[in-house]
Length: 309
Image 1 (cartoon, rainbow, N blue to C red):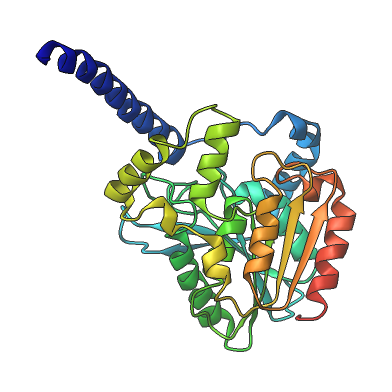
Image 2: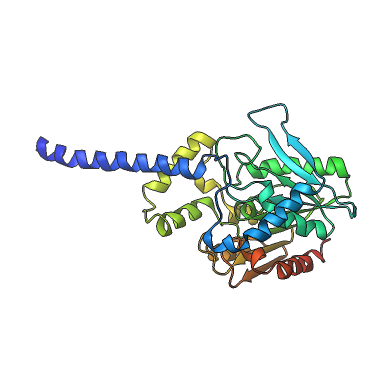
């Protein structure tokens, strides 16, 4: 009997140890900061020349560096602020994507600048020039954005109109931010290809990219995240936050997105009871909607903003 129990116990222990090892590796790969911007997906390589032209614009245009927690090296956050000489009393805060930084949003910055906005481009925690060891997928970042909003109001005055805009992880960040108590100066939100929840996104990627089961990987990764960052993955939910949203919101999503599936756009859209619009860019992949047709993207954004700005 003892030999039979030992024969059963050893394989189970090996499986358990393997799952823990795999979960730790996955957590470090997905959540640990990297000090470079990974190469874009193959389907967007064709836009490289256009992308670097926008980066050149960003590097050349006059801008200021703003900080949160400037004198605290472990918590210092950095942003670029581009003042618009047109001075129309409106500012957009642009939230970047996973493992990106403020420079990677140069194309959107230029678009909004041309629409008359001042532009604030933060580096989120564990990205770019901001401090942080682990990527939090927007859940902690959303609270930092409240302070960026307050800084804009403090510098530009109580009459400033503020737009929240984000793409991919940035889209989810502004969706999660929408459920917080925001100053009246925040007038509208645009979220491009944000996920419904980080748990749902992780499970989707486990199945579709890594061919791994949800259990026991997701619960183990969630537990590691609780230990490192203070919350379980199920806490990070755009849909739950959007239920509390009262700002007009435009959802944008690529119809051929295989990284954040388009069904999440519908989940997010259904969650909010505020004035809302949904634009599915039929032939665009993940975060490709702008690049697929920049003029059409700008027109669609401008039409939405015409009501609120």
